[in-house]
Length: 361
View 1 (tube, helix red, strand yellow):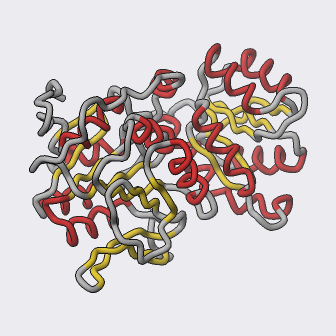
View 2 (cartoon, helix red, strand yellow; view 1 turned 30 degrees about the vertical axis):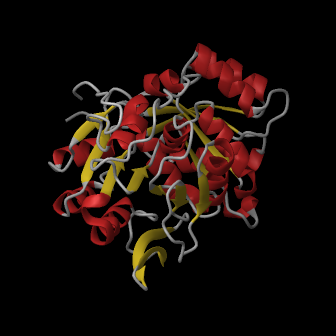
View 3 (tube, rainbow, N blue to C red; view 1 turned 90 degrees about the horizontal axis):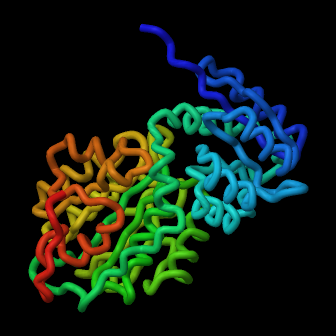
């Protein structure tokens, strides 16, 4: 079998040292070809149009044109997958970039980034290689799209869940913001979120959910009681599970084991939710690469809960939803714009109070 064409990458960073390190990391892979580098926004934009790379790595802080302006122009005129490479202190900038169309990010080391850039090597290579699974037209389709606001009174019948567990990876932050932004008021169930994200960024993500949606949201610390209208986000680099304390179900944060592939783990969140909430759980598998969530979806289904997966029509990367579907545990396959309604109605069927129904998946 012939080897696929290399992934053509344009490296954009105002630091000469960072450009050299990133280029060296990427060039070590036979599946990647660094076709150009740029040190400022204007040069980066010109090379994007000239070289038409398959992928851009982007430092947001640049002279002559910042990364946000570059992203807006590129996504409107020459849609290209972008991975942001950012310091951990720039979390708000990272989330803004993701909402403007960047598909993922890699965090630079917090201490002495100039000498420790090589520490991001494995993560950067993995995310660049995964670009072949990405559908850039799905990213562009989401940009500027207003969330479909869930209408009518919130569901509260027998089919409505009391606990919703959401798992996502690549493309997930923007998808999660769109889902929660579709609720005009906080929905009367508790939400738990496992988004593949490094340590130091999940608190900022939870803060954005708290500020920009009708829900109360925070990064789980452990010991929080599940309450209607709240969102607890799994901390980066750790696992979010549930525990039973004095007859009450609370959150529990578990350290990452060296052998863990993902932290936070969607499988562990779903499995724990199934154990402690059983048939009252709705699990939602969103966009992402890999198969995290597959085993957890089966556990939720076996416990009597329900599972929905994001449709291939909207998933930026269909890997995780596809694996969940193949497990046989998924009840409904739903496009992103209808997931809020699916949550409100239990699994996307007939809403218990207003009788409205969605079409077949």
